[in-house]
Length: 414
Image (tube, rainbow, N blue to C red; front, side):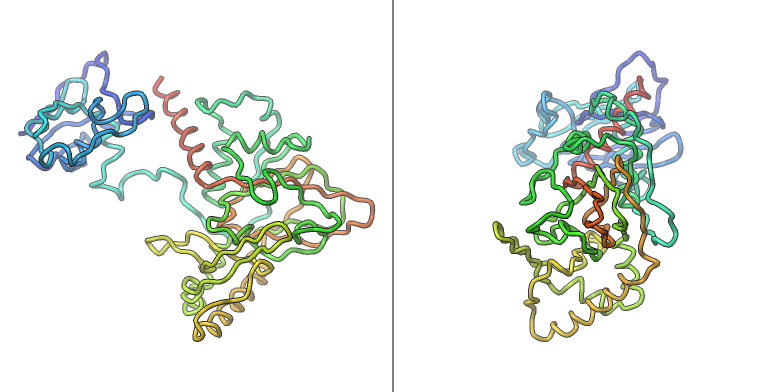
């Protein structure tokens, strides 16, 4: 069933898509060929794409497939009575693709820009939806990626509109794991409004916002003036917070420099130098425990977490939050040998990025990738060091960036 292109009248609207996004038509379709089980699409730039009939039927936009009010799927493929197949394919004058399906006899239209953006027969050619990670060494950088946020909080916050500063900030966190914003308000509690421009903060046993300052009777080493070793926060949780924000309200103390390390760069160095230790730390489950007076959080997990493709997904490194190792007998000595190899890497100065906090500074970082630490500071000379912090999830950051990119596309398409 071949179909060739026709001239596209710009006045004819394209069909809707099964989402709320805007999909530009950067490349036209010039030819369609359909068999009962496959649609073959030829594009003006020479790309040839293939789509299965079952995939197309499930991703249609009519009211038998999605709820038009919510754009959520309501189709149950198993209720069609037979495998969905294509009976006819037509390329419309406006560039849309119209398909006739059996067994339900529906004629359904597809947006060409949406089809191109979801061309799973060319996954390797599709643009990255989100920024790709870049591993880094502290010795190669003078400071975190830094943005001037003067006046930003005075601007209206509208999730449907563009926000170039927030876009750049979120891209930096996804790429480098870290960004610093400067010249933000320093009123206590203002961090919550800043955080909500990304997404809802995640409450923990430390509260929705927590104060990082030396205090009597502390329930965390963070609430002292001592140095803190490189660590992630809350590895004691089944799902440790994905993003942390630290907002400087006051700082006129001596010492207390912030230290940041790319935990993934450290893990890759371990993999390159000591592959056997790397493998051990991806396999042995360590005990992480925060047994405070009013809570008792314990979780068991590998120190280096990999995703289904074997790529780095998270690190759980926090010596002061490790409980007694409870591993198979024969794994104990290899586990400690691997731990000490990792600890030696963490002490190498090339991994550490050091910088000071100025009131109005905010750092946002991936808490499942970046290790943060602190040099000791002098709390007895009348100075004050006060940071407020909160946690969010990686999901909120990714969602907000997608929304910002959607707003930019809609603005571009008018």
